[in-house]
Image (cartoon, rainbow, N blue to C red; front, side, top):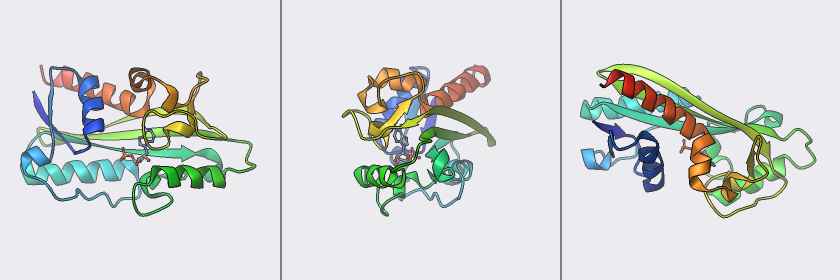
Length: 193
Ligand code: IMP
């Protein structure tokens, strides 16, 4: 089955394709003639995931899904949350975002946090939402070279390593996005036999 995924990010595409398996062929907005930036202007992860999926569905009429992720830090009242990509600057400056996060947590004892991903699926014109989360803590300083975003400062519960120090397969197995996409995969397997 072919399904349109709202990303042109090759890393994310590969990660999600790996989780969904060979029964599904992911196609990108670019491959469907959608080259403009897909809007995500909402104040919640659910709102953004739905906005992106609806945008693609309106333009292509194809079954499609979109995801949105945020890092929610308890001591910062859930920040950076839906603003995770643009926490420090208007761009996706991962290093600046991490620096600001560590700065805002200086001297703070409760460093608990979670990553949360929401996937919005439009299948046969119907909308469905799936959520995945992973709990952990924000480390005192970055460690590891792998992954992206806040991976070097996030240590998942039950591990002594940051996400950036883990093998990609291991991160995918327990991650927010991995869990949300696994729910999507189970749903598609049930509904698209
Ligand atoms: P997006 O919704 O997947 O584009 O994620 C928004 C932002 O959250 C990204 O720009 C990253 O800063 C952060 N983020 C999302 N997923 C991860 C992850 O798996 N590890 C670390 N940071 C992430």
